[in-house]
Image (cartoon, rainbow, N blue to C red; front, side):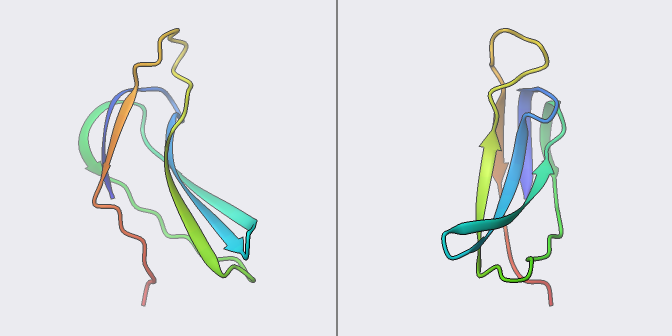
Length: 87
């Protein structure tokens, strides 16, 4: 995945992988984006499905908090997101 950011606070944007068994979330993994303003840069994570997980839900998120700034003007652009099995 690549992502570009603008005025991003610390730990404000992330990719969350929710591992599920049926409709129950059994575990979660997160990949946090760097704060600040940045041109497109690559991000990657290797996650292992926990025992009993039958599916995964991927969420690209931008949280409501900034680094103490009263106005939340942060932006994030996600691109080329891929999720697959390593061989």
